[in-house]
Each structure stands twice: as structure tokens, then as C-alpha cells.
Length: 219
Ligand SMILES: *Cc1c(COP(=O)(O)O)cnc(C)c1O
Image 1 (cartoon, rainbow, N blue to C red):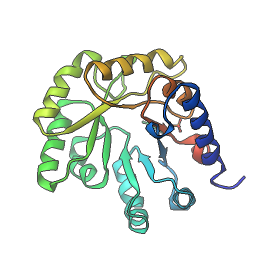
Image 2 (cartoon, rainbow, N blue to C red):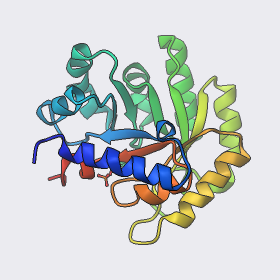
Image 3 (tube, helix red, strand yellow):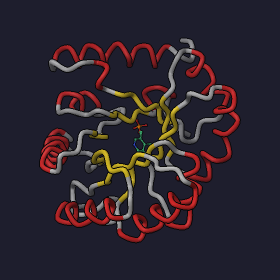
Image 4 (cartoon, protein in one colour):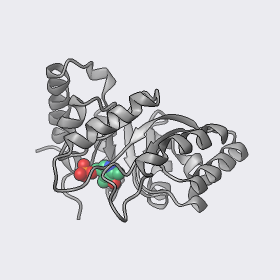
């Protein structure tokens, strides 16, 4: 198997699922989650035409992506992992889109960083959709207040993101996230990973975040 066969197979799957669910394949954006993988694993995907990538840690992304972006300037890099407020400025500098906005202190830090750098990444509010302890994301009840704060801070809020609880059917959580996004007039829905992207697409995902199904199991 070549390094890009899993990507091609996944794209074919996405097209099939989109068709079955009456959605346009162009509305489903595949983020290749490259965390833990180095440039040698990423370059073949870029050569095959993949442009949208995601990382879950600012430090790791800052170490490997500037060189790759210099080689291919139209790469679009998204942050999908938890963000510490003290890394907000670095994140605004590096990423086009931040999927993990989830609390007041981070909103304030991102607002400041945007003003300083004169750059406004698109942002998604991460929701702790299964109401789990120790999980990133805001409570469902806090969505309206945080969206209002983010707007006041000048953030470009475009959607909602969630990681549903492990080891349980994801579809009901995806359906709830889709409803919440509709209720708040947000167009982007970041949901679905290697194990559950099919349900996510059927329920309206506009971004799916897929790592291991493209790169293989992480060490
Ligand atoms: C790692 C990660 C993914 C991708 O997970 P896979 O199961 O490897 O597809 C998606 N979203 C987030 C937030 C992640 O941290």
C-alpha cells in the first residue's frame, strides 16, 4: 500500500456517504489530523493534493509546519486541540482556524492576540457535548454567553465543534450539536473522526477530523 492509498480510499468513502445522504461532497471538508506524524509522512499527502491539515498542540505544530507551509503556501492549518491562553498569540499566528475556543479566559486572550497581530482566525466554539468530566469544551448551557463574549471580543465565530464520549454511539451527540449550531445560526460543524465520520457526515458535518484512518495508528 502506498502512503496515500488510505487518503484516496477515505475520499471515495466520503463521496459515497455524501451522495447517500443527499449532501454535496464539496460541503464536507476533510481535515487530515497529522499530530505525532512528521514531515516525511505529511509530504506525500500534500503531493497528492491534500491541503487541509489539523494539529492538536501548538508547540508540535510550530515545530513542523512553518517549513511545510513555506514549501506549499496554500496549506490550510487548523488547531483542533485544547489551547492554553498563554499560547493564544502563537496559535493566532500559525492557524487559519481554531476549533477549540471554550472559555472566557481564552476568548479574552485570543481577542488580545488578534488585535496585536492584526489577524483574525476563524473560530469554532468547542462544546462538551456529553457533559463529561475532564473533557475540553464548554457546557451546552454556556453556549449563548460565550458566543456573545466572543463576538464582543471580535472573534470570527463560524461554528461548533465536539468530540462525543468514547465507546458509545456518537450519532445522538452529532444530532444535538447540529441542532445547537442551527439554533445559533452557525454554519460550520466540526464533528466526526476516524471511527465515526460516516454518522457525522449524515448529520451535517462540514469539517471531519480524521487522523488514524489516513496516517495509520499513532504510536
Ligand atoms: C486526534 C484527534 C482527531 C483524529 O482522531 P482519529 O481517531 O485518529 O481520526 C480528531 N479530533 C481531535 C480533537 C483529535 O485530537
